[in-house]
Structure formats: C-alpha cells, structure tokens
Length: 65
Image (cartoon, rainbow, N blue to C red):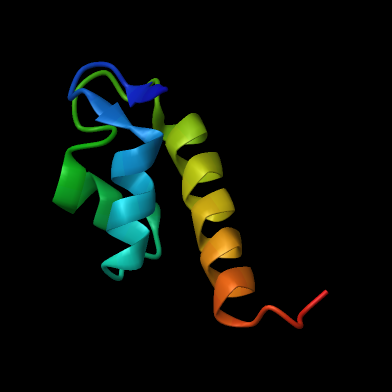
C-alpha cells in the first residue's frame, strides 16, 4: 500500500528503510522524501514506521512478549 502518494513510497519501502537503520520520521523524510511535499502522509508514515520497528524488534528477539 502507498503511504506517500507524492513520492510513491510504500509500506515495503518504509520497512526496508527501517532494516537499513531508519528509526524516526525525520530519517524517512531524508531517505525517502516522505512528508516533503504536501505532508498529509506524515501520520500514516509514522504509524508504519512504528509497526516496522516493532516487527523488526520481535524478529530480532523471538522470545519477547
């Protein structure tokens, strides 16, 4: 699903950016251009970032609850 239509950024792009070390919206803005045009995607991009970081954390530690 597209998170940022202006820059054609998908959830997959955000997940990849998190795997490459992005951990805040500012880094997504710099790396992917999320929120740099109209800004209406910032809330959704932030939520997607949080889900991706949580998923990565759980996959790194499969015994966490």
